[in-house]
Length: 196
Image (cartoon, rainbow, N blue to C red):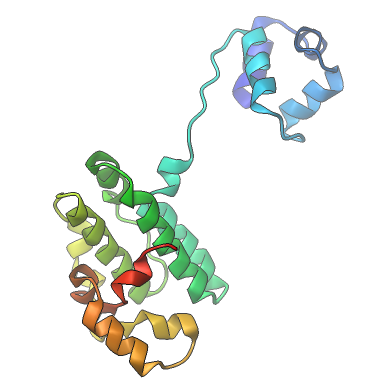
């Protein structure tokens, strides 16, 4: 909206003139420019056309399908003591990236995400970076092999998620954890990484 407002000012049009040309009121344009309304895309397109700019719409999908974004979501979930939601974010990333080509995977994992505040989740993200990279034949990003991305003791993720010991599920995780995660001490049943 800041760009559209700047374009309106540069074009010498008042809010009333723009409103008249797109079939709305001056007060609606004022709310639009102030961010006080949630306009339809068609309204924004008409506004852009009137002020002589091309409206570009960028998908949030690329930002959301990155380990940087996923780490931020995990950090937020952990701050709320919600390990299940943190893990859901990992599964969502894997699910989103599963349909991507090698170039999209490279973009999604190339930048080292900020720490989640928990070494276990940081190790998991490194394992996920390797897991999805190998899935499309890419080399492992260098940051994912840093010593701080490996745990000294095994972590059975499912026990954090269900908030209690579960020997049966731990054995399953031990037996079927993807090697990219197991090598880092992160043990989770491979099927848990698939959304349903």
